[in-house]
Each structure stands twice: as structure tokens, then as C-alpha cells.
Amino acid sequence: MTLFTKAALMLAAICMPNIAFAAVDTGDSAWILTATALVLFMTLPGLALFYAGLVQPKNVVSVLMHHFALACLMSVLWVVAGYSLAFNGDGAWVGDLSGYMMSSISFDSLSGTIPESLFATFQMTFAVITPALIIGAYVERIKFGAVLAFSGIWLLAVYAPVTHWVWGGGIMAGWGVMDFAGGIVVHATAGTAALVAAIVLGKRRNFPSSVQPPHSPILTMIGASMLWIGWFGFNGGSALAAGEGAAMAMLVTHISASVASLVWMAIEWVKFGRPSLVGMVTGMVAGLATVTPASGFIGVPGGIILGLAGGYLCYVAVDIIRNKLHIDDSLDVFAVHGVGGIVGTLLVAVLATDSFSGLGLAEGMTVTSQLSVQAASVAITVLWTAIASYIILKVISATIGLRVDQQDEIEGLDISQHGERGYHSN
Image 1 (tube, rainbow, N blue to C red):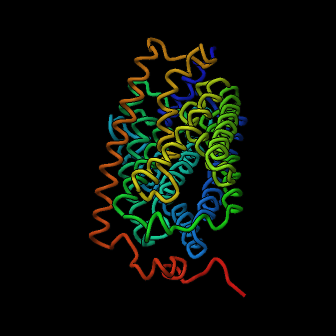
Image 2: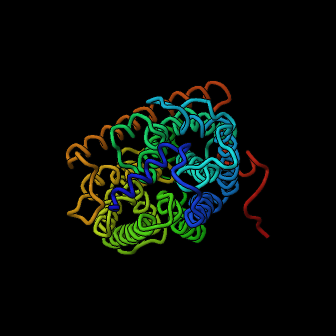
Image 3: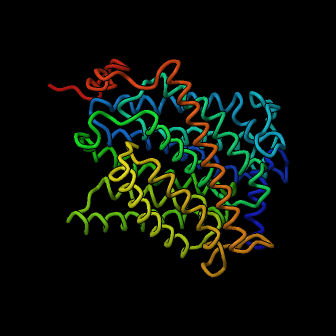
């Protein structure tokens, strides 16, 4: 059996979780149990600390609260309807509610060689981190209730349908799209929604002239390190088996992150005369986001190339969005995750070929035809995410409101929204 055939069977397991191909494989199950914990670890506490270190001290609690609350709310919504909309039914554009409250999952139902309950939980951790990524666009100025309302509706209206298109047997799966671990499903959706949210919500007070630098690069580095470790579960776990696919996905993931970090560091060193810790770890995230959609299809050369591309292009995107367009995507979610995920999604059509030590494209596919599928899938996803996110934000703005008032923003969201402080002076 060729590596490409094995990869195809793994993707088939993703698209048809209710079909039992074999008995439970305890090795595969043990690995996905571990990977599931690693992906949740990316959000709690990884992403939470990464973002918390980047804001002002008066908004640390609010950022941590956003992440913890979303982890709880998204998990419940995934059980109630999200999983069913993503993975039940054979519709082209959305699943159905036949698996409402996960009623389609029994004790002995399988997804490939692992229990379907484990597959659903693994996918739940993706459903948790995707809306959590968007938090970076609206920190320091949004109402807590608006965060919950937007994220909950967005999960069901955007994330679940896109997951169905790509991994649930929907329209893009039928086209043969290649998205191993979420360049489209996670990064393109979260990045696009973040950009729309930043525009609709508006800039922080006196942006960009008086916006304070990150208050704790230490917290940010600790959180970034947790993200890096957790990403092995994110990409390696998406193989849904403990084998060659997971091992190569982990290797290229690590290489891409390392290369992108060095690229970002080198750019800052040349441009400013000294590299920053925050810049270097941001480059790491850019490399991870860029390699995600390709990680199960490429070899080491592809990992190096994606690290180079992600580190450079995401840096350029940050500069354009923040300094030229003056859009206050506060923690650069679109520039890093959106741009990185889209770049990796497009380049996999080239880097998966034998010329770059990849697994090869599907039978009948050429680089040109695969690139067309990748580009069309990205365009549709970005368009739907932008439209749906805009509508959701406008509805919330007209009802409960999106933004805190000016005095609350000056005081900080920790006190005004939660009545707590992250730090107490003596």
C-alpha cells in the first residue's frame, strides 16, 4: 500500500465517520487520545497566555476569560448541533441534525480505526480553538456578552458548514480539496472573521499612535511554546492513526515553525537592528499556520519552503494591515493565521508532488487542476465567512451591542467587565 493510498484512507475516515472499516486499533486510539489533549492544551492555556501577554495589564483577565468561556460554550454547542452539522448527512453545503445531541454516536460506533466518540472529541478541540483565534482581533474593547453571542452563532453558521464542505463529505471534499489539518477550515475562517470583526468593531482608542506594547513578552513566549507543542497533536493527530503519516506531519510541522521563526527574526534584525522575542514567536505561529493544510501531504523540502514563505509573507501582511491600511486587527490574526493558512493551502498543490518529496497528487490531478480546486475552495470559504461574520456582528451590534463605552475601555475590561484584576500593586 502506497503512502498516498494510506493518506486517502485516512481522509475517507474523516469524511465518513460513521462507517466502521475495522475493529478499534488501540495504538491509533492511544495516539488520538493524546492528540486530543494536546489540541485542547493549545487553547487552554496556550493561546490564552499567548494573547494575554500581548495586551495591556488592565485587560489580561478579560482575555483569559474569553478563552475559558469559549472552550466551555463551543464544547456544548458542538455536542448539541455542531458535530451533526459538520459530519452527519450527505448534503453538499451543510450536514443535518440527524445526530443532534450526538445521538448518532454509540459506545461501539467507529470512525476508521478509532471510536467515533474519540473522533468527535478530537474534532471538538478544533471547534474550540478556531473561534478562540478570533479573540485576538477584538481584545481590549469588546463586551463579554458580544464575545459569547458572536462565537456561538459563528460556530454553527460558519465553522460547522465549512467543516462539512472540506472534511464532512461536502462540496469541496468532492472536488478533491487538500486540507490536512485546517488551512481552510480553521485558519482561513478564523483569519477572515477576525479581519471583518476588526473593521466592524473599530479601532482601539488612539490606534496606532498610543497603543501600548505587549505588557508581558514572557507570558507570550510561554503561551507560544505551548502552542508549538500542542500543534503536534493538531497536525499529527489529523492523520487519525499512529503511523508514517503522523510522524511526517510532526516533522514538517516542526521544521516549518523553526524556519519561519528564524525568517521573522532576521527581518526584524535587518530592519530594526535587533530582533524581538514577540516577533520571533509570532513567526513561529506563522510557520505553524502555513504548514497546517499541507502537513500530511508533504516531505521535509515542503516544510522548509512553507516556513520560508509563511515567515516572510505573514510579516509583510502584518505591515500592510497594521501600518498601511490602519486596520486594528489587534493581535494580527488575519495576517498570521489567515494569510498563513491560505498560502499553505495554495502551495500544497505544488509541494505535495514527487519533485518536492511529497506524497503525490490524487490520480488524474495535475498541479494546475489541484491549484484550481485549492483556490476555488479558499475563495468560497473567505467569501462566506466574511458575509456571515459581518451579518452576525451587525445583528449583535443592533441588539446587545458590540463595544464597551469609552470609560470602560480606559479603565480596562478586567474591572469593567469582570470586576477582577490580573495584577495588584503593593
